[in-house]
Length: 163
Length: 294
Image (cartoon, each protein chain N blue to C red):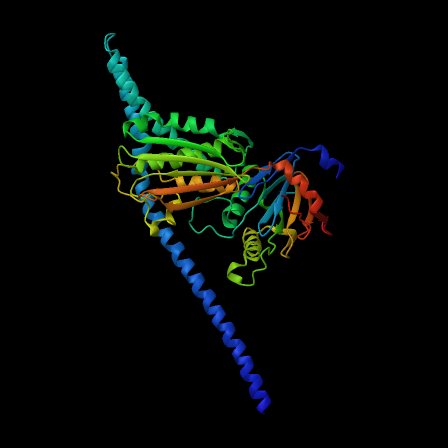
């Protein structure tokens, strides 16, 4: 963690992705969104995305706001950076149910998580670890040169009203 | 016997309910599938238009710029007024080209997931002036009156200063104003109103053009979508503008609203919250607890 403070830090916004060959801590905050972290264990290349919805349905631009776009783009970007498919491992985070919706059609968090696992397994990448679902948001730090992830949960009820 | 019949019936009831719920979900998914299918067909159609669109939008303006510049090169020394006229035409062509290319690159950056807000303080009054200078020649050509107003609801008569991403706001506004000018009749009025209040900036662009039919309001944010798709349409552009407006607004945490203008035409309102800057996420630390997972 001491190392954490000394290294350059990148804040990852939703609908974007980040890949680096250098040591960087990437921070992102997830509610029902999902972040897929890919890491090449041999070449020490790390990449992470942050998507909000499972599928792009043709609305607006074809952006990494959507899981199917975000994961394929991240995977491609990893390969562009020299990563090899057989050396890539994966960690998946997020997908909390923030609104406590019971209706499965609107169950965005769970659908995001399902999609992430589905696409990653279709790519033949092993999921090393994951922390998904639940009702609490997460803040994660991803180290692009070690693949290490630190996670904290957001506590819901402690927000103070600011006037 | 009686008990088990009751039990059977109540179980049957639950099963019926589940079947109904699944049916509903199935219907919803089918509807979505149908929609996506329609979009797919549309994008196939668009591919056919692509080459002609690119020719219209990029190759033709370049050809004109080259031809016009060549003309100027061969002018005599006494023909300065002709040179001015030709330079004006070059400017117009280059202006369109520049605007289209900016949009294409912006869309490409968003789709690649490379966009992130670059936050600084913006003087909205200055931004308004810049926009009105930027469109000067198009406004003059169609004799459109362009009215800009800036209101600071928190401090009356104070300049409107706002913390956000200047370049993205700039392109949002330019796309909205460009559309309004494009679809407005000659000698009409286009308004650009900024209102700062409650930590939010609202940007409203309104015109007196033909407006947008209610059925079309959902699809205009799709990329490459133009309501008038004829190849020889007098309205130029790729149909990228509004999809960029929406993506940028989302990136800045805001939203886009469409309303009818009171006297015909359309009002588009973009509301953007003041940016906290990413450093402020560190304040979240107080609300976080360590998880068991590392």
